[in-house]
Image (cartoon, rainbow, N blue to C red):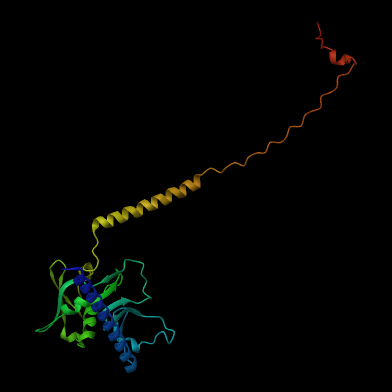
Length: 253
């Protein structure tokens, strides 16, 4: 393959990539324009405590100066779900696909596959904000316009990343610890290392505080006062008085 052919292939790939990106951008623009003209939105709000979903065009809390109750913003066109800006992100934040190899929903004798949805769906979550089985059902329901009730008792069946099968009742109680373990796996050794690091930091801080408390106060230097020289008496020619030469004579018996 000569240089000319390689150059032509490179130009072809570049032009194809530019056309693909341009086409995607144009489709997004037309979709946004269509939503604007029709008064609808491809964004859906999921509230705290698993309330919703509510179309973004039908949420006006900010207009009435009410606090935000939004937890997730789901974009049915982009198939992305991000945490609302009001959600505190003090812990680890992850963004990516749901941690399942495959999933489906069974209702009585019918089965609905979620595999195509899982391949394209991306979500942002933290240890304090993990989507539950009902969230997964509603994300998928928005894209398919299929809605199920409690009386139909839908079951979410998944295959985790290790190939194990699990089933969760969507409108009934489920094992939350097992479900959450699919999103965040905590190794006991890592937890012990983190605890040891925290203890070491606390001990170092305590030692630093003790050193500051016991540190001796520097004495202020004492300024030496100049010693005044005493005047030397001048020698005199006068004989010392007799008193100075008198000796005490002890009385004799």
